[in-house]
Image 1 (tube, rainbow, N blue to C red):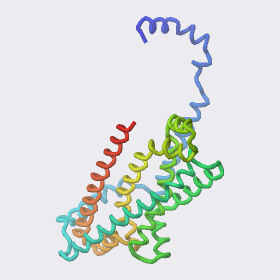
Image 2 (image 1 turned 60 degrees about the vertical axis):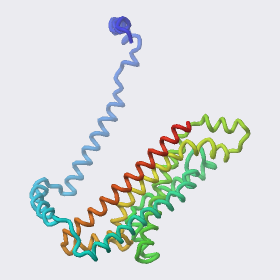
Image 3 (image 1 turned 180 degrees about the vertical axis):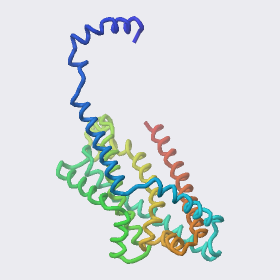
Length: 289
């Protein structure tokens, strides 16, 4: 906007307000809605603080105990070299649980996402059923799925892999369907114009646009599941979580610190590799387009 035009608008501002009063008028309904939402959130926060008995003094007094616990973790060493090998084996088991669970979950979530996305589904009824099925699976926490599968197939990493897979089916199907719905319609229309069927239009018009995003989401979940798999091990679903819980209960904080360092190293390594793969796929996709 030029300075002359801006000066002209400012000069004629009273006239503009008079001629277009409906535009300049304050929307009190919208403002009241915003204020009502803010008041509701503040009220819920205050209620949560009162119900949970949050206390700043308890946090301050507990800092000394936290410092004492951290001091007991130094240096982070296992109880023996034999224990170190056991922890490394359990860590490998945890990574395997996360990898297989994420892979199987992504493979099974993909067809559900195709049925749940508006631009790839068969009809409205199928879309509704696919979305509600995804919501149902996603509504149950991964730790609960671990408890369920432990009772179904018994203790061990197989139950952990099934728990990760089931949880990821619900989460990834939602993310995949949202990625499918953001696909540009022009490539689809171009493929359809050649006389291709709807399946071919999805295959060559939609999927090439969203596959890098879907792969990136699956890689992120692999990294995230490596962390969460340490928790499901506590309930007997395999992995290093059981050893971590045992060392905490026996107050072996040096071994606890050693296990935590192993988990951090594994997560950082997976993050580095998955980040490299995501950048490679994104770069390849941009070159293709």
